Amino acid sequence: MLPTDHLMEKLVSLAKRRGFVFQSSEIYGGLGSVWDYGPLGVELKKNIKERWWRSLVHERDDIEGLDAAILMHPKVWEASGHVAGFTDPLVDCKHCKNRFRADDPRIKGTPGEPTAQCPVCGSKGTLTAPRMFNLMFKTFMGPVEEAAAVVYLRPETAQGIYVNFLNVLQSSRQKVPFGIAQIGKAFRNEITPGNFTFRTREFEQMEMQFFVKPGTDQEWFEFWRQERMKWLVGLGIRPAKLRFHQHTKDELAHYAKDAYDIQYEFPFGWQEFEGIHNRTNFDLSRHQEYSGKKLEYLDAATNERFIPYVVETSAGADRTTLVVMADAYHEEDVEGEKRVVLRVHPAIAPLKAAVFPLVNKDGMPDLARRIYDDLRRHFNAFFDDGGSIGRRYRRQDEAGTPFGITVDGQTTQDGTVTVRDRDTLVQVRVAADGLVGYLAERLRG
Ligand code: ATP
Image 1 (tube, rainbow, N blue to C red):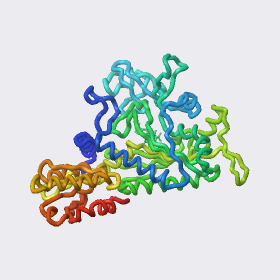
Image 2: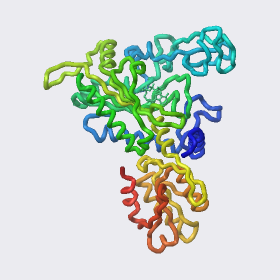
Image 3: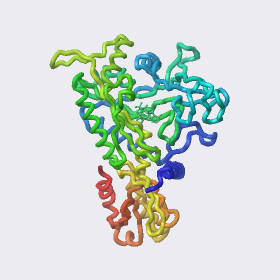
Image 4: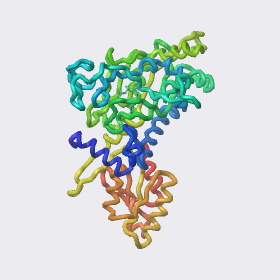
């Protein structure tokens, strides 16, 4: 195992070198805590999102999909409590103008008092008393920048689901219990961002809200807690690196009756990357109150009317991608040489196979191209005829490509290629015309 601090540095360096993640607007010096996904990163993240969507929306009858807009009526955020309560207590240094969270462990003393010292410039007595700072990004809709035109970039996708509860219920003819799933961007003006893509100001969430009859909520909560952990293990993440953390009374959000974080042991410690929350009927009740529209459900069997309770599973697509990358990063010695390999689950690997002509002669490049053309109609594949075969293998190991296909002298005679397994390094000969079926079988799962 690598010393943990180095793992993060190596991951950031690999992410940039191989085109997983770049800093936003890098040529202008970057934009704080905003990141872009490069050619391999976009594939990895997309595969994770698709797998999530498939497992919830396609493989279940009781969950529908939704794609709500980022901009919403400003009253949504009053009803949800975000205008009043989505705040962090912050402290400013009047001397160096830096801003900190009031609970920043580097601050010595009590902010606002003459003895407190700024952790950046070291001045004494220059820290203001904590002030509440809202984390929502504000902008203006329409031509006039006035208070009445303020809209927010959504800080979570969940509210788009709640305000569409009746629309989805009626159009899909679902019955409670049922869920609505959504993947989309969310924005938070985080003050202490950092740790690469762990805490960013623009990020993507994969959220599912499951509407249930009051009284059955804890049972469903337990069900979804287990389901989500199973899904993460199925994604190939090492179970020993995953754990639940139940929120204490102090940690529980104002709307929640019970909540668990799923944490991963990052190089910088155990941290949340997904949450399962019993949000009660808080959100729907508040939207009913603020909009004046009834958001009740009529149970046709019992003729009862009620506002459903909501069990939420809320995951960050970016944090999950970071977990997958951190968990997959391995360095090992192979015959005296260092090999960096991303052991991502083959089903979510950005590239499924790379095709190499062993040498650029004797008809091998043409044959390899034909095999590549055939493969890429089925999988995301890559063709590489540059450099020694060893170097080409190593480039794909770093990209996490599970299979390396080499066309050699024997291919021209008997139509077989070698298939090299990224993890075991075992090579087997497979008939080129059966390659698609062979790979499909091994990529399943
Ligand atoms: P944290 O305590 O880390 O700020 P949170 O408890 O506010 O997170 P939730 O509001 O429950 O997080 O959001 C659900 C998920 O959305 C998180 O588990 C995380 O994966 C993702 N997420 C939240 N904020 C960010 C962020 N600033 N950057 C990247 N992902 C985020």
